[in-house]
Length: 347
Image (cartoon, rainbow, N blue to C red):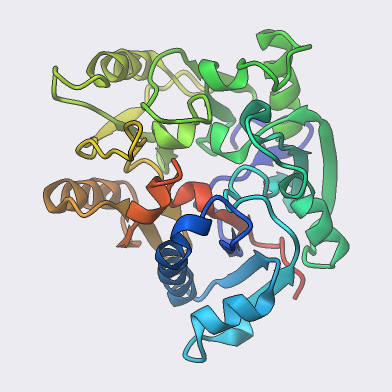
């Protein structure tokens, strides 16, 4: 039996799922200048999710826009569109974070302030509570709004351990009143975990989240960590990611066991008009029967990343999703989705 606190345990992404939550892009978001391109990406994601026989919950200000995009050749019996205003589409960071309490799913609602008040978040911060008010969730929703926390900033191995980054959780305008030790204790108690691992190194250029863990290192079953590596000494990421790799090698789980590490390739540098974009293969989504992997039109890197992720998730189909549109706004596939464990959704 894995360690837990208060009969709680932080749900892993490979636990059985009821469905996936996404927020549809619209003209009121930063996607306005490339709305057709990013909508096509969301259509690809939505259809891939439905191929998994999971339910799909879509938040959108206008249901008719979503219906027109997806068309009639999808299983509408497994799609719920909830009309709500949103500032942006990065639902990973404002959707509900699931824990199990006494073996039953409980959803938690932390404050989302757009990565330390960098952008507007007045609508996104209310999405989870509004979904609960609409009767979308069967699981109870616990109000944790006294803490700021983004779903992309934490990972669990399912064995009582949380993995995060120091640069994100201690960044300004999140939880400034708390010391690192106080914040760790609060999160461990609320998530039902007993150990927190802090990565002190490793960031991706262009990442405006202050270093979310889901862009750098991800847990997989049986004590595996998949992480971004860089083999090019001329790349600006080489030294930070080498130091991150050394951090990971020293880490152990709640029972003192070392992790098995799998190094993912780093995508070739991608740029917008101003700066490098934070492209990463670590931003994959685990579902009941498949793993959706962000790909970037780089055949050699894309294939290698999919093969390595497949090694960590035997028995699941690996499917690449072209995330070149998503990376234009500095996010990727995992950032745009939130899994909802079994027992989350109203029947």
